[in-house]
Image (cartoon, rainbow, N blue to C red; front, top):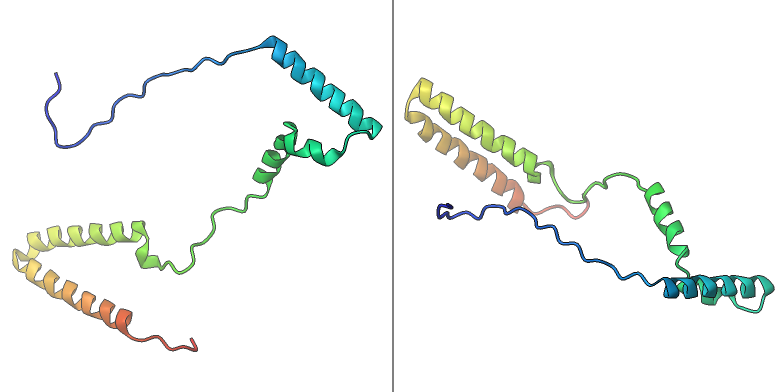
Length: 137
């Protein structure tokens, strides 16, 4: 029995396979057509440019070459170190850790001190954020 919940829980994925239709006659026709086109191309009676747009074999080379040119994760432009999720988590963790140890050693007065520290940090942040940037820097 399932208890009512505010949060949505994950449900297991259903296995759904859609069978494909295999037509051996059609496959044989496609193989013969491809063979005839290769023969006409070898004789020079068929233009090569017509084949490249419809040729199934041309897809393999593009996929194979795309992985060889991977250069790693690109650095994001304009994103500071303080905007990253890991840095924000670290600040929150240190804030919680400091509040716990401060409450143990100093008592409830630590929250007043932390409020002053947060207000000072916010003032410094907004001072540098709202300060106009020089055009030649």
